[in-house]
Length: 494
Image (cartoon, rainbow, N blue to C red; front, top):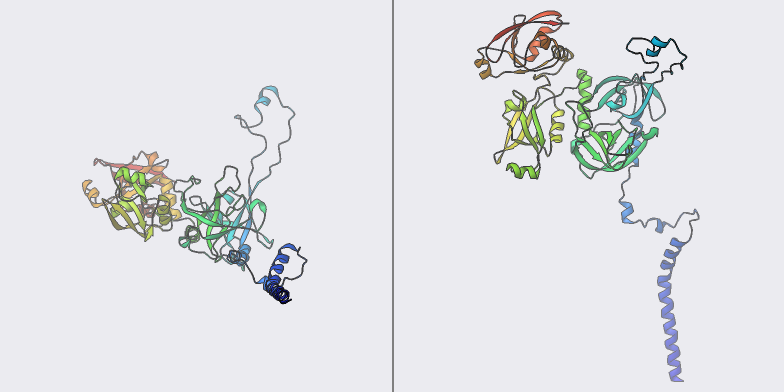
């Protein structure tokens, strides 16, 4: 009996212990099981379950505030273009060639001329209605309509455009509009989150997100002579209609204008490209102040520097812009930069490839100074170059100066003291290149040094602009050729 009682007592004690263990652990496990298996009924979960968030979920980026603060400043642009229709004229100037031989025939009526319609996006950058977009969205348009996010429609006019950067500035008549402030695209980092806002496929107010994949990309889509390509590459989804829209950072600042995609299908396949905001800001300011973009030139022909090329040339750097050639009397030439140098920095910014050098120079105006860092003969050097305009002058290009240079059909370069002394002259500018124009028509050849126009001395290209301003008819051009032969030409200008 004693043994039976002991066994009975042990059994009771074991049962009590088991019940205690179940009471302690069962509620939590059952609750966890039920929360994962019972369908949601619409009732609010217990508070202690709501607070248990996965760390990975808690750290996901939230773009709602940025999207809300920027989407209303991105507009839809509708552009109309002329379509040439109707019956084509033959070389007789009217009618059909068959009518000439066989007489009039019944023919279909000429089709109605309907405009071609294109669409894109734009970014409001001021409360009084200035809008940035891509030049290819509105180039040669006969009508530009802007639709705001709240469905208001305005007719816009073109303030100015720049095919070399594929940017255009529009204006609508309104006083109080939402707008996006400019950010510093130089501060943008690879891997940083960005949002693309636009109207792909005419779907208004579309926001997509991605990261910066690369900077300083050149994809060779602009065909202008002085085209500037140094795109921000992202994986934010961009499609047809996004052109001219905003690329913004997580602070809601404009850091790019969406421009292109890399695709074999015409739709997004993983990469999109935007013009950096620092270039867009400079273009906008130039268009407002001068009516055209002031393009500064360093005067070098450059190519990429790579590790393989560095080994072949015995150069100690494998990144940068290799100087293939230097234009005579250019900013680079006068600063002492020579063929074979590798430019590795400008104004304290690192230069890893030609696109980065072009981008940094593109932000400057003629007459601005640039501190250029380059590598030569095993050591780094630094010089200050005074940038010139596309006509070789240290001055802003004005409509008058552009008109004179285009009228004359020439580009000019200044001469240094040794060149003036060799020609036995005190002043003059050399005809660096010739195209169709007044000088070529008069028989002037490349290399001719103009010393006087209508007996007025010429020291700089700007002097030609000043002398010819408002002139028409015939002018007398005096100068000397490299061999020392003096020549005089009568040049007609209109």
